[in-house]
Length: 331
Image (cartoon, rainbow, N blue to C red; front, side):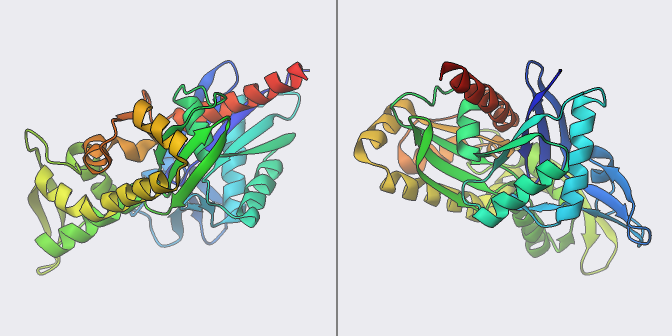
């Protein structure tokens, strides 16, 4: 029998699938477009993301996961089924063992919903992992050792901040402020400062191209097109990276505050370890410029971003299955 072990990073912004022995085989936006009239799914993933904010009345592009939690159960299930089949192919004879990653603050009910959706999507067995642990494994940290590591995992919908030791989380907090909130902050800022209405995708574009949360040595600029709220006509405005820093100040400082409060709750021995080893950033949201410097400036602790922050959680989720399999073999 051929059986495949799969790790899924079920993110608010994107879904990554890790297949044992192959690494991350699929990374697509968690967006589904369906036809309201027939209730049929039109597109899933990248294809559906391109439709965000650009669909006719009967077709809606939705994100079935909000802030790391399933907000639309049936759509999530169909989406997972689609991604699992796309990753494994139809040839698989035996249902896979799937480990899925959830933010550390989710409730039992929310965990159960993820578990059920995964079983419905065709899993033989489901393991639920907390995001910080998966992120730490994926970032290459040996989590089994008795020393403290601090992980700040910033995704699309949630940021997880945790101190990990001996394979478990000692202190952790999950907040619903992450990449999507950075986008929303940019949308609000453009509206307030430039009277310009822009969409989610444009905001994300600004964030990726010139967004920063700490002053850059060389300021950058970018032309942004949107709708002038006064005249109602399309208009182009030049935005600078300094403006994005102003726009992103509030959400990024909220993340820094949580890092601070997690450090306050950390036992002194582990806090000393963290001060020695530094803070590791993972997740797509950590790619924002200047975040390392911002956290360092506020905590005085050396901060670095993991090698490939986008895929850390997926790789860690997949490796966790191997970690469990290894444990079973030892017993």
